[in-house]
Image (cartoon, rainbow, N blue to C red; front, side):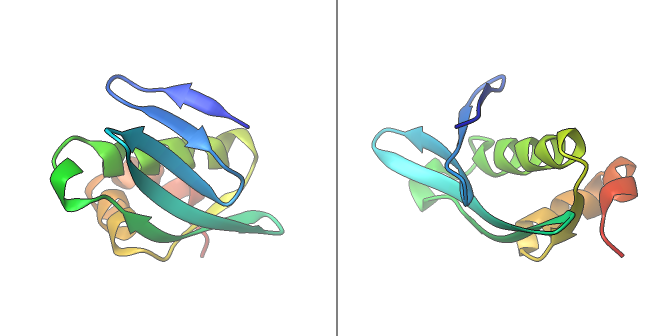
Length: 96
């Protein structure tokens, strides 16, 4: 299990999703690894936790995870696509 503490959140890698637990609620970014790519396919943050940076922490963690493991990123969830559009400096790891 890989754990990273970001500025505001602790992200836990549960093997098929990255998770932040807060107040008994879980925010997550589901992923699957296929060969040399990581498919980020489902992000969820409970409504009461939105605006706390959970989605950004999860996506940034996933991108760092991809770089550290030599993986291409498939941003198949809307949150990951939006993040990567806003931060084009990550475009070098997006699967074509």
